[in-house]
Each structure stands twice: as structure tokens, then as C-alpha cells.
Image (cartoon, rainbow, N blue to C red; front, side, top):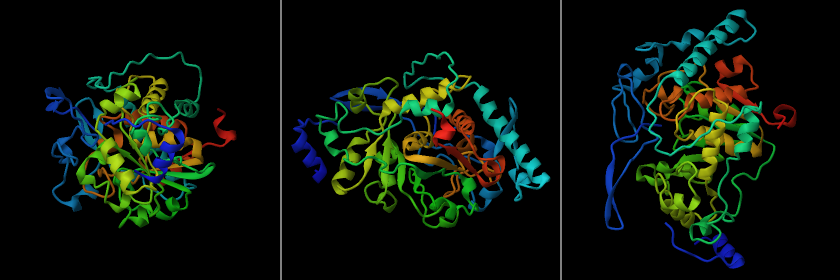
Length: 412
């Protein structure tokens, strides 16, 4: 057990007890307490594929591949033009470099219109609503509250050892004493893993921020010119924590950074029930990591606050959204709000560098990574755009959305 955990046990007299993106895939059977029962296993990396993008459906963490990596930059994202027809979209037609030139202004505006049209189309599309997470939502009376104020009120946060039941059980003894962020009034950057970061040359801009947030196992080594080298915090989902292939306990990219790990549980589920039945059992590797690196700043996100963020998203979206948890990016944005004076979200909204690549660091081709399939991603991105204070050129050519959090901007 870590030194800070031992100290907390002694000083607080805690009693120790033993505790223990994306479609549904077939149920599997596992034994619990000697009885067999069926469970649904999901993958946050699994997407609904489009054969025209040369994707292969797989049940593993890399659901789609391409035959030749050299093909990836030339494969264009697929946009829907009618109910049953997709067309390859060529964003390169809209690339420009001078915001003062009328032609560039026009290209940027047209590109923006195409992107927003796709997000809005996805929101209107019907989707399978299995309600695996037992979401129980009642639409509130609209009160004119801004999107920024509504997300702040969702209070996305990490768990504390002071929160019941962690103030008396074993798991709470592993929670770090330090907060996820010590900073206040910081400059913050949220770095998407989008394929459009390739060739962006935004590395220096990214590294100039006080807090740089990355996601899951997105690397920086070999990509520094485009994505920077600085990482202060990683937001990771429970599969990355749980599954051996991500090497949480040994990979260098998970060392010397703060970590916020999330698992959604069920809507309105108590923390006691979540501990007994998480989506993926992240608790054992969390404890192993904290034992191996006792000085680490590894936190667990409060699953109740994840669903509060989803509720904020649904409150401000005038159509029904996926009843699945938000993305790591939206959760990370919520976590950052108290720490920052502004947040730059880099390639969260696609720029004119948009290509068919899912990530900047591999050759997977999948437009769902940009526009959404399982997470309510289209709703998230429209929500973020409603808070954007950057101009169109910065947003759609440079790939940067800015959320200003000074008192003169948010009015909350």
C-alpha cells in the first residue's frame, strides 16, 4: 500500500473491507459465484462500418484496417447525400491560408456548412436504442441557461477518498491525496487523436499550454511536430485500464502524467453497485498501478458525473441522442472546466485537413471516428461549437476551438 494511503488510514481511522466507440456485440457467458449468467460485452473502439471505406469488421480493439498504409491519406471521408447514398468528400478543396482573402473566407464558410450539415444529419438519423445503460431521462423545461453554464453545473469530477463508500472501504485507501489538477486559471489544450492532426504542425502551439490533455494510448513519440511532446494528463477508458494489450502498468506514456480513468456504470447507479458491477473491472489494475507507483496521480472519474454530463448534453440538444456515455473528449472537457481560463480543443471539430483516418498514429480508416456512431459524438461537437469563441478560420482551417472561461465570457 502507498505511503499516503497508509497515512490516511491511520489519521482517519478508516475500516478496511475487501472490494473488488461502438455497438453491442454478442453476449458471452461467464461464471460468478458458481452460477452462469449472460452479459453483454461492448467495445468503445468498435464502430459501424462502411464497406466503401474498405473496412473489415472485427471484434478486437482495432475494428478496421486498410490494405496499404499509403492509401490512407488518399481515402476521403464519406458523407451522406441521401438516405441510401454516401459520397466521398474532398476537404482539400477548401484548404486556404489567408483569412483576409475573400476566396479563403468563402472556402472556409462552405467547409463549415458541409461539416455542420453532416453533424445535424447524424442527429436526425434513426438509431438502435437498446438502452443498455438504463437511462431514465425527462426533458426539462428550457430555462435559457447557456451550454457552458449547463456543463459546469454537471460537475464532472474525480472521486475522493472522502466520498462514501470510499471513506471506509479498501478501494478508497488507494485514492491519491492530491487533486487531479492543482492549477487554476491555466491555459489548457484538449488534443483529439484525429487523423487530421497529421501534417498540422501544431506541436509548438500545443506544448505552449499549461495543461495538455490526451486520451487513451495516443502517442507523442514520432509525432511531435504535429501533436507536441507535452502531456500533463491522460483521460483513459476502463478498457485501456483493464486490457493487457494497452500495458497500463509498463508503458512509458502512462508514466509521469496524471491519469483520469472512467467507466460509466449505469445511469443513476449507486457507487456501491458500480463497484460490484462496472462495465469493465478497472479496479484491480488501478490498485496495482497505485502500488507500483505510489506517488502517482491516478484518479477515477465519478461515474455519476459522466451521466450528469450526458444529461447536460441531452438537455441542450433538441432531438433524442444516443443513450450511451459521452466520449473521453467530452468527459475530459468537463474535468478541465474548474482549472482553466480557456480551453483550446485541437481537431475535436474537424478542420479542412480532415481525411479518412481515424487516428493520426495508425492506418485505420473510419469516418465514424469523426462524426460518431456509438457515442453521441455529433451532439457533443455541436454542443462544443455553441461555446466556441474562436473565429471560423481558426476553427475550420487551423483546427482549434477555444472555450473562454473568464468571468467576462461565461456569465455563470
